[in-house]
Length: 105
Image (tube, rainbow, N blue to C red; front, top):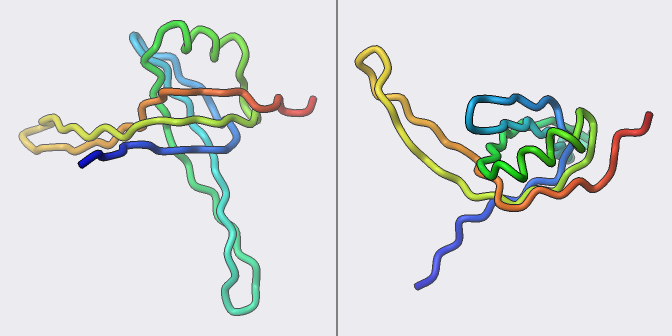
């Protein structure tokens, strides 16, 4: 049996954080629904980890806050110990990162 670990995001860049070996890109996505006859909206944030060095350099040079991006990624779960307690993390690891449009000036 085949399995799939794919997460797709279409949203706007919030901020970009450069760490020692990775780049983290916060992406805002909006969702809309109807409730009691009213239209509701909410923004969800995902922090995407860029591991590929060339891809990270390109993003740093070409992508900024407010830009619309399309990201295909995989989900990775891990854990570590902090102060004697086990801490679980879920990472969104980018596999494809496309700039769709720049934020209007």
